[in-house]
Image (tube, rainbow, N blue to C red):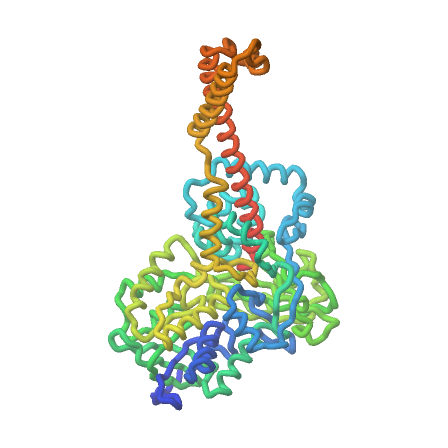
Length: 611
């Protein structure tokens, strides 16, 4: 094998003499950082992307004019900065698309998000009753600790619903048991509402316009790759450089500073120096490529972090329409496919011939395993067989196909990942001129917009001297499929105001104190009324008040009777006051628990959308 030639490229300074920034990776995070540098700060970065196209996991592949999105990327965000970025780059090339997705389970299709009547008809009355009974059982006797995904979901929705709609699909995606997958993943993908936040949302809602993206989402006319190609062109028009087919295979450092990257391209190896470095490459590869290498514990930690890969079998079907969904989740363990995209329903321009349909069958696997190494023609054959078995298309109607592999798509949250990642984070914090960004750079299962935010914040750290913690993007942010708009009040101020109001309105009543207070008031009232009548005197004293003797044995409108009435009033008031306080507290607790559970169930529908 011919040796690759190596030479050093001198640092290319910007026109204004500022630093040279080297960006590793041309996905959403890396290209966002490049765009922000060149448009906001007039810094011309150089970007190295090892593939023949930009976009990373969010790229769009092309086969004979058919466009295939690697995963199905809806464009929605709660970040105004990301929304500005998208509109600035794409303009009118965004389409507003209707959303429909279903679950295929037990040879039936279930609407997703789940709809009660549809779910009841699909599962049957008997199974539905068992699911409800399981839900109640796990509400009464939940897992005391929520360390795994299985425990987290079971505590919220019951074991039987977990086994029905979660276990099979989740294990297809991750390739490990749900008893090994960390609960942190579920908590990150479904907002774990607190009782306080549920109550606050009730009060904020009337003054907030909520735009839900459950039913609609934005999408570029020809897939997400259209967005990232436009960003690449914008960077290059302004003097930046985005080099494709350029694989970074070495990271040179001196002490705590990165000095250069080694890039393999077209049979050559180039050593490219720089002043600052931003990387979205898998953090495990970055650690392994360091020269000189980091301490052994850091290398060991990088070796033990795991990723999950997937491949897409793209099929061209000779049918104008197949099914209305954008995508379908396949929970059936009898087939290997995990999710099916119908790209024509994402955008008509994804399909060049409107008399045909293109599908993307997603198979989750590990790089090097049986599925990953299977020949393309065998994978296409498997896809044709499974699409017919599910009932979405006929085998003979599939006229063509192609396969695209996407390595390191999902950082795995196994039982050991947190410890290993912490070791890596501590080491990377010692590198003075380096920042790691993006899903793989942070080993965090972020969405596209969160990856972009890490790129933006890295630029602000570099150019403005800020100290944004990129590791917590999406960990500290409220995130689900809603965008709050036109909120004039500061959320922190609203929270404090509501908390103060709730402290007065819904303060827990102390049964003992409330009973004593009510008892004293009632007893003193009886004593005072009796005393007043006695002081007024007359031939017949207090005939109406005398009726109390029917309830208070021994009571009479006399001075001894006034004392007896005082005692009776204290006892009766104490009993009824304490009972009222107890019932009132119980009712408030049940109502607040209902609000929290309803909020969690509403957010359940976002879980599979983020896989």
